[in-house]
Image (cartoon, rainbow, N blue to C red; front, top):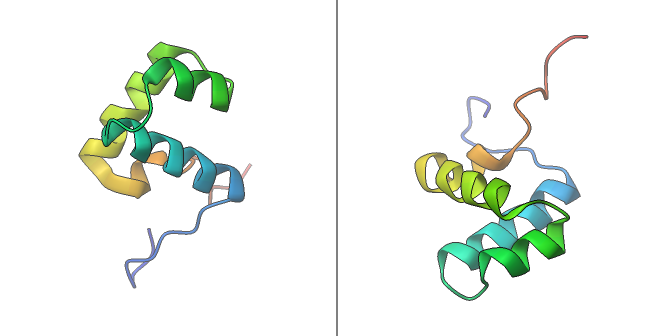
Length: 68
């Protein structure tokens, strides 16, 4: 996150955000989310935890902005 409080996300991360948000709001089941995103149910559970702890910023790549 930069100084203005905005988050830069790729389109893939935006899609991931929408699906994880649907899981946290009980509009989508974790197994359905896993199938949509091509991940395991366990990974979806980890993403839900990161989303609850850090919001949308928790779903962005931790490698973005780093060198090599």
